[in-house]
Image (cartoon, rainbow, N blue to C red; front, side, top):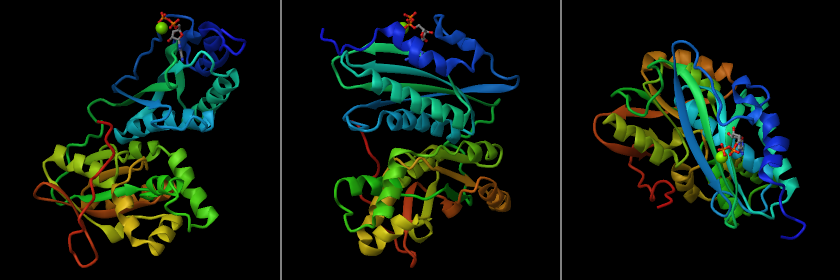
Length: 329
Ligand code: ADP
Ligand code: MG
């Protein structure tokens, strides 16, 4: 091996990962075989995992801190979609033998930043070397009052359909990256790219929706595809109005110039906003959550009898959708 060989596994854990476990006594500073903790009385544990692979989910030259933060955030977004409080996470890293220590340091720094922002702690993981692409897996653990987790199933006929934040930014950011939106002003492009690189898990809103939302999901595959999951799991049809879908100023600028990007907005993924349904009587309370969390929450449609997802234009005509959602297989 040449002089650029990465530090050994135990030095790495001790130097970069153990500090991230400091705030969680049951992690034993990563010196034992596993972490131990007890859920709060009356709570269920909520568990989820996501992996990011170099060349698939991020570029080799992406800033390591952003890669780390996005990985943590997409996991936290799944907890948010269940209405859970985020508590802890496990991290499996697959580095190449020649991965620079500075890369690992920046990666760990990104995690430290977001741990502080979202109140979670690293409690364990695995550290492996391989000649393949860098690969990172986070498994996030949260808690929710027993039996109260938000589910995809549960949307009721007559429910309103809501989304948080703005939709389509991440997919438009990706389109910009491919050179498809070169007409955009620099600040609009920066906004879209920022949304792609660093989503915001809606943990606060997710928690507030407990006992209020009938069904919830986070939008990772795209608005149409994820709404389709809710419709399927709930045995209903979801009808939304395209004109109600909330757009950022940057997304509006893209659509104003090229209306065809509406399809990118409706079917593109990676926004990590929450989509949920609730009865009309909950409208006032939901509006108060938007103010409380300084995040738009917009009613975009309604749950109807039937199956599937229908997107309608202002005249009530059905808008045909391109193939919905990204699939690995
Ligand atoms: P074992 O061989 O018994 O699985 P390891 O040597 O892999 O143990 O890990 C020792 C401890 O360090 C364990 O508590 C494990 O959870 C933790 N650990 C290893 N890698 C990581 C990592 N990348 N992030 C967080 N904790 C880690
Ligand atoms: Mg191990």
